[in-house]
Amino acid sequence: MNSPVCRPTVLVVDDEPLVCNALKFLLDRFGFDTVMVQSGAEALECFQHKEFQLVITDFAMPRMSGVDLAIAIKARSPHQPILMLTAYAERFWSEPVAAVDKILAKPISIPKLQEAIKLVSASAAPPESIPAAN
Image 1 (cartoon, rainbow, N blue to C red):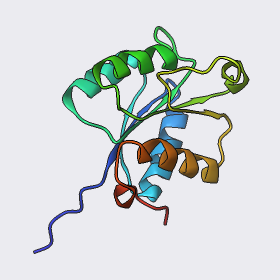
Image 2 (image 1 turned 90 degrees about the vertical axis):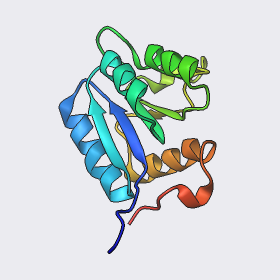
Image 3 (image 1 turned 180 degrees about the vertical axis):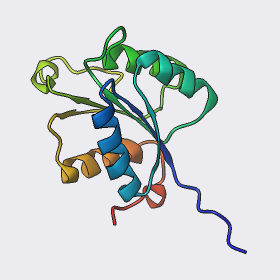
Image 4 (image 1 turned 45 degrees about the horizontal axis):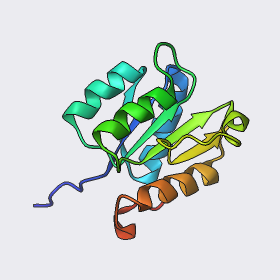
């Protein structure tokens, strides 16, 4: 009897369902399980009950920005890798956010997303545990 393969899990936070679904599709192809939520509050609730290899969050969301979410997560788990996606990336070039490990400009390309995931995940996991894209 084969035991199920334990895939690392990514928490995706974006108020746009289409973006969540697109990221879920890509992350599945990259070998990750995905939990999708549409707000910072939902993300913090999920974070209390489950561990994630990576958190991918949008910047511009109602009530709690991706930066505020990253700060709250890092306060609970300082080594949690966080990748932020934003259409406003240039805003952060001169003022980086300490709580965010990597910022990607939207629209994102698949190779840049893969590279960013490996970069931010590498600090929290041994390289052999980071899935390669198929």
